[in-house]
Amino acid sequence: MSITVKQAVLHQLQYSDPRKTAQTNLENINAPQAVPLKAHLRHSLLPLTDDVDNLLLTLHQAYQGKSKGYGVFQENSLFAQNLNLWLENDIDFLQFSASSTEALAAELSQRIFAQPGTVIVCHYSFLATDYLFFALLDHKEGMSVDDHLDIHPTHALEVQRFDVACRINLSELQNNAQSNRYLTFAKGRIGRNIGDFFLTFLGAEEGLDAKVQNQCLLQAVHDFCTENELSAPARQEVKTQVFDYCQEQIKNGEEIKLQELSEQMPTLNSRSFANFTENAGYDLEAEFPPVKNSLKTLKKFSGSGKGVTISFDASLLNGRVQWDEENDRLIIQDLPPNLRDQLEKAK
Image (cartoon, rainbow, N blue to C red; front, side, top):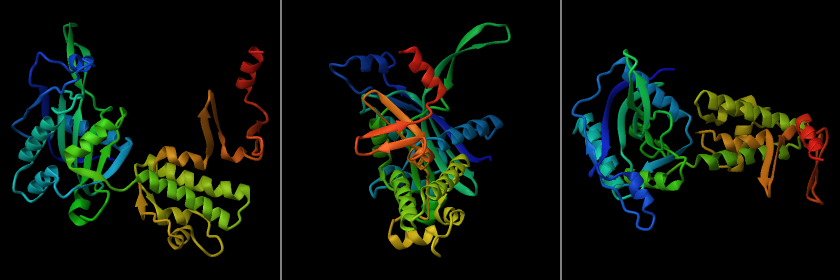
């Protein structure tokens, strides 16, 4: 699937004092200080070329695969006010991107983890939905070889790994301002400091909790099977159906649709899964994003601690794997050959 880029622009965040580096700042552990940044602004939008389309498609695909949080703007959000000025045609896209980049530079300059980078702001559509993408991309050092076989240093954009990024569903924001999910933001790899900072900059707070929705789904599936007194094999078959459906939604970059999922599950005692969840008050949204790690428990049991890591298919419980609850132990029959070999060599 492709995206349609409507408007896009790049700006840069640079050190106000080129003699300072973030590395020098962060190495000064005894007295960490914020490093002032300034915005270096582009004065025109990017021409809509194939290169720009390919760049934005790569960023879109990378963002699709990221762990994301959901949020809503607070009433006093300056970013939202600026966004609204653009949506109401009071300022153009270039002005909106420039003022937002300057605000980002000012906010980052107060943080000890401030780093320069390239800001990309893009308005695009995907599957008949309008989006605004806003991200700060790092640079990675590299080398290139020219036609004369000479080597030159290069500064490439980091388009697969980025932590400061958000996407706003403009269609939903304009049509359903009460939504709790029109804003998504990347949950970074390096702790909550970056994510908390970015929410502060956006003037946003967390909205839909996708992890809680997935946990509620798992509990509902468990209770659905229990209330209908399914046997262990039948119970695992239902869980496998749910898991396979969710995996397909993840693969396609789509959300879990409760009614659609219900139609793929068996109707038990003349009641569908959707009807069961509605009457039991699980407070599940009609649609919500799948969380891969949460859904694993439908197919596997796993855990680690005190130097032991165990993982096995849920279907093996009460078969090859027996749980002795009273003595707090697992009995595993037919060990994997490679594990048995290691044990024999260690005797």
